[in-house]
Amino acid sequence: MLEDWIESRNMQRKSEGRECKLRWTEQMILIIIAVIILPLMIVIGVLWNSMSQTFEEQAETLVEYKLKESTEFLEHRIDSIYSIMYQMITDQSIRSSCWAMARQSNVAQEKSRMHQRFIEFVSQSDYL
Image 1 (spheres, rainbow, N blue to C red):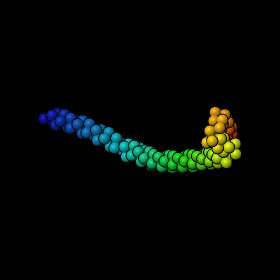
Image 2: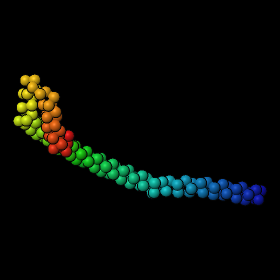
Image 3: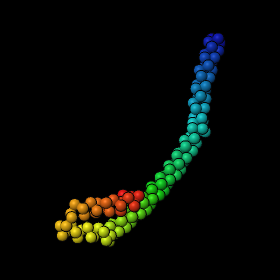
C-alpha cells in the first residue's frame, strides 16, 4: 500500500510538472508577445502613419509645383501666340495682299506672298 501511494504521488508530481511546463511555455509566449511583438507593432504603425503623411505632403507639393510650372508655360505660350497673331494682323504686306485678293488681282501671287509671310511669322516662334 505504501508503494502504491508513493507511485501515485510520483505520477501526480510528473503530471504537475507537465502542467507547470505547459503553463510556463504559455506564460513565456504571452510575455514574448507582450514585450516584443506588441511594442514592435505599435512602432511600425506609428512609423507607417508618419511616412504616409510625409509621402502625401511631398506628392501634394510636387503636384502644386507641376501645376504652377504648367500654368506659367501655357501663359507664356499663349502670350507668344497672341504676339505673333497681332504682328500678322498689323503686318502691312499681309494687309495689302488681302486687299489685292479681295479686288481679284494676282490672286495666286498674293496667296503665295501671304503664305510665305505666314511661314516667316511662324518660324520666329519656338512654340508654333
